[in-house]
Image 1 (cartoon, one colour):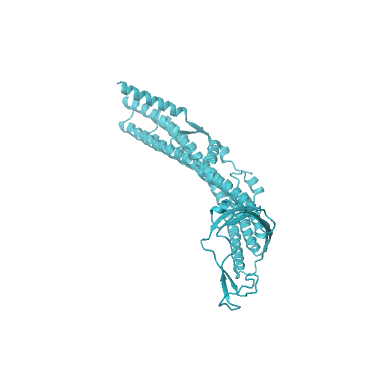
Image 2: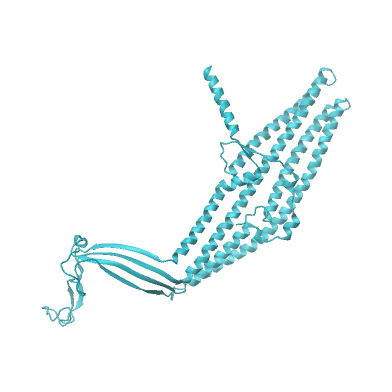
Length: 472
């Protein structure tokens, strides 16, 4: 018994905790949450950061490049020097080699290098002029602009999808409310009919007809309640809300949700309002820079360099780190130690002939640019078609909604009058059931039309590029 009470108390506590932590989201909150937590938006933000890092990477090419090197070598057997034999040369100093004739190739021992050597130095390179680098700076900024435009397009798609899912929740909730009203009315009618049956005014079949109608209403309501759970879960998925956490959607539908300023949209309409067109323009600019970059690769590249370091040699590796001598440097000959060295200069690389590779590469990039220009014309045609289609769908769905609204109101009046006539004994039970069925169907059609009209408005605003604007 104590165990059962403990389980009951724990269940009550968990239920209270869950209800206390239920989040209540409006449409604005759903959109805000999605823009902060949607994986697609997060990846788009990461793409922007990648583009920013790429700009800095490209800028870094024009800054001094400093490399440090340390090397340690040991030659167990040094290479010999090869030379033409001439006893009068400064290397032989009149020494005669038996059996060797003047002009013979001789191999002498390497007297100018010790077996072990070490070097520690720094090389500095500074780019002075590179046409490709200058174009690359512009391309890096164009790439960032492309990332921003793509991010805006992603945000618009996410907001549109979330808005449609939000409307689905509200419409279905209103649909359930209408079923509650119908169930209450039919249940009241059933009670009245049973009372009339008990008093002998109606037959049992009249009670059965209304019972069937009530059962159908209850069953349909259960189905829509289950549907509500599914579409709320879908909304949670779209905004990347924790699936295990409860979420309550608040808000009311009004005529303002269907309002659309067509004249205002047409007055300032421009293809550039569309995020997908902005993405295409950014791609077009980036591709034109690719053409310029491949042309710039044929230009000379000028850079400066400087080498600074220390070097030493020794008969063995250990001697490299034990540089002691008993005499001073006299300018010509110095003691055993690390000696500094340095050099600097300019480097000019001039592309002369690449086997026509650059020419064909430029040709490829120009053709790729033409494809983007063709895509631009195609996109404009698609946008024109989308706008016309969206306008037709919006007008058609709004007209259908008005007609279904009138039908629903008319069906409600018919059901009310039919019930009054039935209770007064001048109407039939069959007419009441038929009127209730017609009312239920008209209400279902109305809410379907309402949802279609809301979706059509979202699609229309998106077609004009006015659905989601974020100026950055």
